[in-house]
Image (cartoon, rainbow, N blue to C red; front, side, top):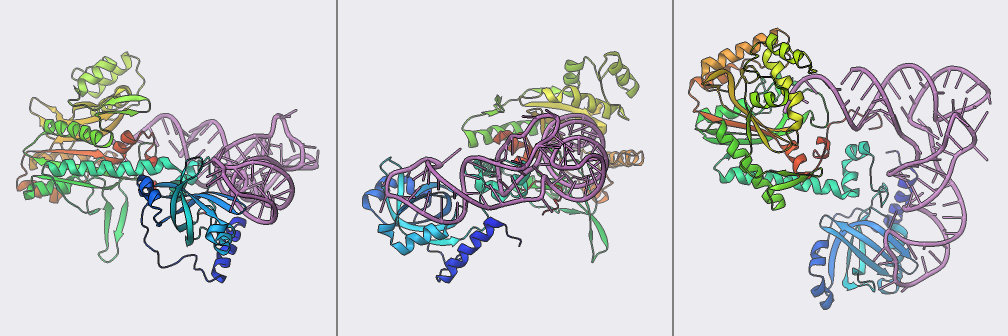
Length: 491
RNA sequence: GGGCCGCUAGCUCAACUGGCAGAGCAACGGACUUUUAAUCCGUGGGUUCUGGGUUCGAGUCCCAGGCGGCUCACCA
């Protein structure tokens, strides 16, 4: 380790402790009688009895004033002031505090509780010990750590210095627990399926490739959970879900990280309408759990998650925003003509369905701030979804949008093995034509369907984006503890 | 990947059209037994992201590269 000036100073203090026979990283810790929050909660009672308490924490503020000192120590639960007096604690103990402790050190104190004359609840320290000497200095006590790159590369420092990320990641955990509770109560079984896939599928995305040395086999990190969960529906579990990491070899931006957490769930004897009911109910449940309300605030706007949410067909949504009826303009040429005649600016896509998707992304999606279900997608975009009986160019699929971002994707699952085979063949053709995100043929999945999969509704939802919504964050990296960054040269 | 912007002390930030690299916090030394981002006096601390170039002189201008942010493209 190369130590800078500050670290060398602290190491000298550490050595001073050692030569006084004190281990700056002791193996044994006397258990605390209270966390800091618990001390504050029971302060009146504890102060009145003058009971001796023991508690631990990191020194966050330190004010040495000659023969007495104040400091604030912090643990996960909170922050409390401590007071040390040279007369009361003993010269050796006191001087050791002044000479060897620093901001950032983790210490243990015993003492009784009292109010200072300004009324602050304070621990009157009887004794203190070092639990872990901090060698590196903390960021500035008032501004904390603000440099975004430093915050992400050294999240541990960010979490010490800044309250906001601590709040966000507690809420993230509460959100995931709320989802589990909701699904468990509805009779869903939580399962775990492979991360390493011999064939990737279930989504349109490019995979990460890895290799099993012993088996001489290339494997893909999963891009979706879908195809294994549906195998379980074939197997007879009627309600399954998995919350797990997906990996997609795509760009990184404020809505995308190469690895991200996905919820997927499948329910037998259900369709996409049931999935809409489930999703809107689930998010309202989460909001109630986290905020005691089905309305939440996001970036200054009130987002009302109260069910039911509006359902708009993709056709109507596009018609409303652009005046183009995709049921009229049914070919790529006709669609391009319509786009051109209205003077809309749009990238050219190779197929009708992709052009429809482009039109939607460009002109509709950014406007979907309040929760909205967009339903009935072009079949080509959805190779795993069941076609609408009344119009087989469209499928029974919806995506849920909130704050202009896709929060869920769901369909009535295609369970006809022959049609599924044809859809895979269409994908292979697209791949041959240069579509890098086209799906692979999954022969074993087709085999599973030949044993009969009940009519099933399936839904996927990005946990990271839900967390953004529920923690009022504008970028995904603020809701992922260690988001992906390019390798730094000083790392 | 393209465009634009940024990178200065441990942290938060200054430094005019090129002219001695600074402040606050933190640190170190001193004063101080009820402070609250303690206060007061003093001191030290720099690969100005890296490497080239222009210039008497570069944090500042030019070229190349690194990392980050925003944005466009792709994706959830």
